[in-house]
Image 1: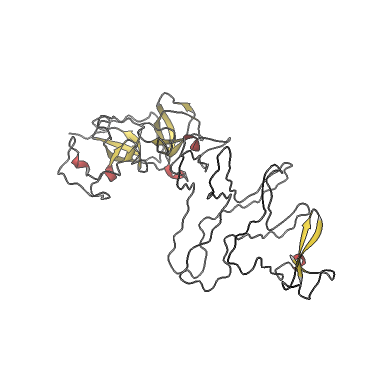
Image 2: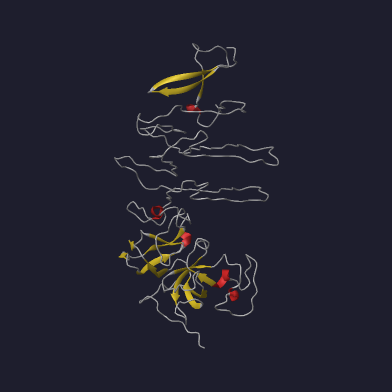
Length: 391
């Protein structure tokens, strides 16, 4: 019998970048009928070969071990999105086969390669803003779902503004790889926008009561080799500013911002540690015999122009906004194994701006005493440093 496809694709031209592949439709519930434009996932958690299915046998009856890929369902059998297969998104149905989308049908699907595709959605969407996704047990492309009651993931962005609260077709740019966070935790995590496109937003709202570990963007570099030169950098953010800034209002040029916003929450756990930014240096090297510097945080400034107005500093510490906020201490040191509290290099480049000064005669108790020059409210003060505890 001829194996013809029923072409019921969306009227009009399809993105030339669109690619199709033939797969078998095997729904989790045998009575489910698929439609063109709906999302499907590979049945990646199926241990038995497709030909083991009693209702639509092909031949034989071999059962393969979990993870095997020899004529296995992980390669060519698809089903509706489920909690188990939500991470194995296959694509969008492009055309139906002889069974018109019933169990065992040979269908064609669009690969999720970034092309703009006709998708069957059930939401009201805005072009280039609404992020759409697949959810456990839902046949239509919808909001990405949440990790608490309805697991889901984002797969694309709407490319037209249309009300599809009554389900229908919509143009969608389908590419799950455009999202840094593949699995959402709430619907609003992917839908809140602030006047611009939501495609590159990195925002996740944690609503689960007990998330053990949650990384919005987990970048890791595993290097096991001999390093003779060069750099190993996991995250490298670079902002090259060549324009001009003459704004009368406050403005910022910042390479990165880390904010933990505590709002309306209950904090009552003695072991709780909260940090706006946490820099760590750890591990146990097999041999640690030489290095130039080793530090958990390296603050490096290299601007060769000193401003005529305002301050230019290596490190600026401020209490946010006004005195209505609380900060017990500026520095809280817990350093049980340290030779020195601080180490200053008085011979560093820029001798006219040394941070260490020889003390004046009124404060000198020995020829080697020194002082740190400080500015408090526009007045110069000195913190004395005595050569010897007995001075």
